[in-house]
Length: 131
Figure 1 (cartoon, one colour):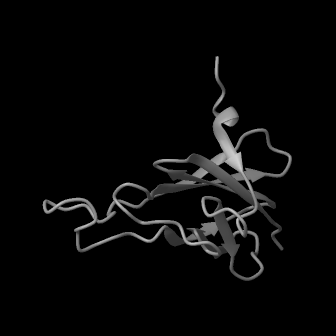
Figure 2 (cartoon, rainbow, N blue to C red):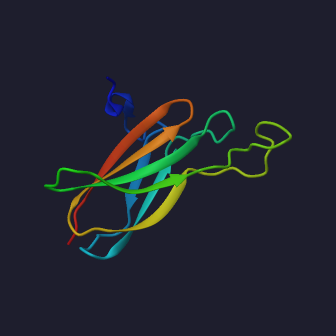
């Protein structure tokens, strides 16, 4: 039986265009919302074409000293230049970037997964300490 973890790829986002970037704004405080920006292609641009694109980014939180990971959200990118006139002829494309607000009660690790329609799943994580 195959495990999903066996199919997730990791790398440094500065050298690999598929890796999700997690940016935390400020110094989070316990019980207070703070901004988290997720993106793909920050350092090396990722294509946004009908044939090759980022479909979604998922965000999870792994609290310190807890067994299970928490699904925070899934952010879909639906427009990739599709149109009735043909591939890449559409008038809209999504950039794989989203900012959301998160409230944490304890420190832990934010974990992001990005899905490329050609190159599969990629992950990254970022430690978050709360005051």
